[in-house]
Image 1 (spheres, rainbow, N blue to C red):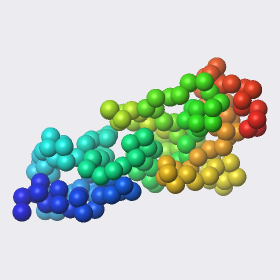
Image 2: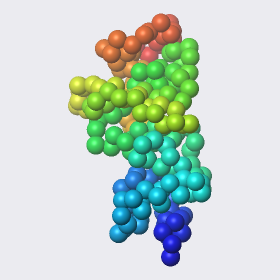
Image 3: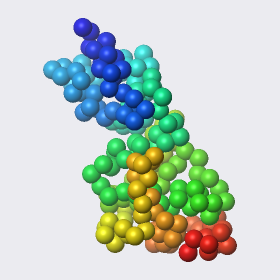
Length: 182
């Protein structure tokens, strides 16, 4: 069987509404024994044939399943930094709670034990990781796991503290609305 057909068959069997993002190592395991050049060509062909859609460097979406489109950036963040302590915070939490007046479009903000970095996810938007030295035991009472997003989520109080500790602009914060969370 041709490698592109083999890739398509395995992805159609594996992918579902919960599992639709694949790393290059995931994809490489589907078609073992290919040279790196042949594998890169295969991934390029899969993109051109709309079998895969590139989310960001090293992460691909299988678009033929019903996936939660509004959560792609969050799910990608969870996959990209799976070995780090991450939680949704800053403008993303404050916007969801109605504490800031503007909704960040196609931009998610997370605190991370990894380095600060902005990941360009092309048509999907951006993921901003902000480094924190906070450990899970220090913030355990102020975070909760959000299974829809596949990430931990800060409380509004913690998100406001994170805004202050990272010296982010708080001009958009509606302090009257914030008081009901503090």
